[in-house]
Length: 172
Image (cartoon, rainbow, N blue to C red):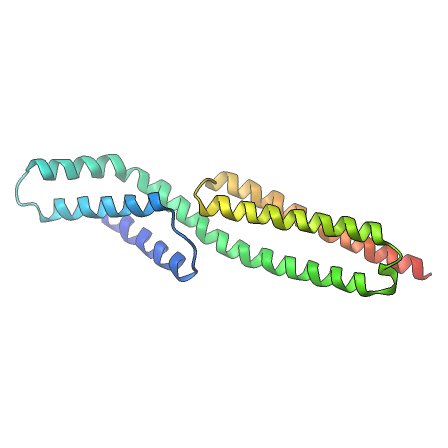
């Protein structure tokens, strides 16, 4: 139990350094378990207070594994955020480049469609981030969501490549 709390405290520290909010229920669980553990460690005889602390450890100790998963998911989310930010920057840059080109004015409809897709994708990303920050998403759902999200990013990239190819074809 003590080792688990120490590992989770380390995860919380790493997340705090990255400015990732820790769900309030996680913080309260850690505080409650730490307090109960200290009560048991300091006990010299079995009193009602110590029995209560033991009950808390038994009841809430099982939730510690779920907390570890949640914090692990938040740590993965920070890496994914970096990847997504880079992909969005590349897509934005490519879109601006296409819009500035001569052929960009020749194909306004596909460019507008790509802009809408990219805007919708960014809005979806904000939604995913807020659900993770609020603790609504669980680990398996997040993996599936992120896989789908990366596929959508790739679809937008392919759409952008299609617009580039249209531009190349129109030059012929």
